[in-house]
Length: 392
Image (tube, rainbow, N blue to C red):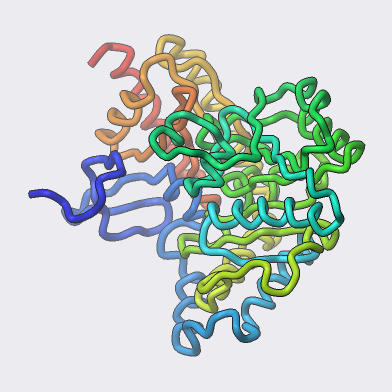
């Protein structure tokens, strides 16, 4: 029987009806260890009691009013973000794509209002993924995203990831911003490196260019810091956020300094659902846990231990894996066999993994995953690599 749903997804032959902590359950009661977290979304696991309480409380008060009016819970979440980050201003969205759209508009509007009408181009990098709107796929330039959707939007220039020289020689009279993921997610869990990111910041300062960071996947504690750029000591001008900030409820935002946000004046941007009371109530509950004592340090500790275990796995299985990379609980195994083989074998072990570019398997468990569940994940990986190595 044909599905009424548009067939744009390559879905696994699995369906889940219940989730608890790091586990998902099918209608037949089969339990799967979720090492994908809805692609870095369910950062506090499934059925988190604090998130449920926050949602239920708000649902009994008010669902929606629109941004025609002040929304107290939105103001509270924005204040919490400003207090704990570089940002002075926050614009709420429903998704990462919308956050990127806001960031692009903000950068161009800043220079337009300053009279630099030629500064419209945004520099991006090969292997990037910033969403699936026309602006986002134009920014990426990847053929698999853009094929058939042309003409693409002008104003983007994609450069090799990690190459500072090519950035230095660009005409700064045309460039308004550099847009980069500190850790590429869809591109294969590729950290940009401290020298590269600090070098970009230096170039941006010298040439009057804004630095936009896409922390949609790498943010909200995923790397062991609230934002992954904190590992490098770099201060951005604009940051796009989504995924983990809602803990599974659709929520995103665009964070900015007062300077970068100055062009976004009355009526220049808007959203019907962005900053919805339900989403913001859940967002506050998420941040309360992320910023609680010891939470981020525990992510770093679990991440380092798991990373070492994965390194040992790679060494023992050189025909299956090539290397492990990433930070915190945003890790990737670059495969020598097709990554789809690893993922399909993992299903049989009741283990959920996530594919990525560069033939990588992503490991993105809930940030509050237990040591016991991480050990179970490692045992599952060991057993499936044994099967792959034997050609079964």
